[in-house]
Length: 419
Image (tube, rainbow, N blue to C red; front, top):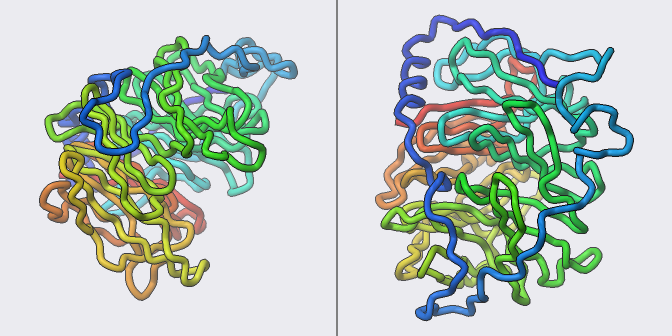
């Protein structure tokens, strides 16, 4: 089903919205935007235990997909409604009153957020926290342009959204294991990209290729070091196994090296940071258990897995920066804490790195931090007052999901412009 949400009237907050729309107009290429693709070679100058990249090409996915689901009567799983089917209107009719953030109106539970390089925002929305999900794309953030809502048949638990061009890629487990799906935002059709045995998750794109972590070779109940990275053209085509080693390869992310070259970074094993781009193929052991990583302008931002003192409140977890070229590592935070449900992954775009941390002595009072990757100078340091469960970032925008009193204390989408 596809429906257009009624237009959004603009309150008298023209200064804020004009600044935000101006930022959208100035949007440039983000880390992870279109650029050089990852070469299928390794560098002879590797200094770590780097596995070969680029082999085991497989045919296009022939697993069952939403194009031919036995119980579905909608042609090609188009999101257009079946005959006689009732369409719903997503509850977004006005902007909420906020002097700093742009927040969609209406009362709905909004989770999972993504931002495209050109400033569009996507999220998952339900009428109530346990209700039926729909995917929403807001192409005119802070304007009267109405968001679009998509409710593919069999949608179960959409998450890990990637918004690029006319596609919205996401993870869903409608077949049992987590698989990758894509909505064509022009036609409204929904189909499986990869629906093989085991979990396929954490999709990322540079605008040309789609990369994800894949557990098709994993042992039951344990990845056994067999979680690998796969790649395929975003527009469709054969899959390619990027890694093949005895450790789990996970959390891939596209970013840039110091010279602007697009690169792929990920975590190998518990704590080795890998970076690959053309002749560059680097392994940087951290000696830590790494939770997540991002990359921009040759700086890897990563977060330790937290030392859990109190799982309900206190999770010390610092953010550190490592330079790709020489491996030098330095802390970006000191004894930072975050709430148990808070997004722990740093995000990066256009030489900026963002993350979420708590406000001592209350880790649940989240703060959005955005700094310059080279100088660590603060670009944004704003309190939210609640637990931020998801963070997304582009060159000109930051978006988070966090509860709001004017949304019945359910999670909402907060959008903030960057200077």
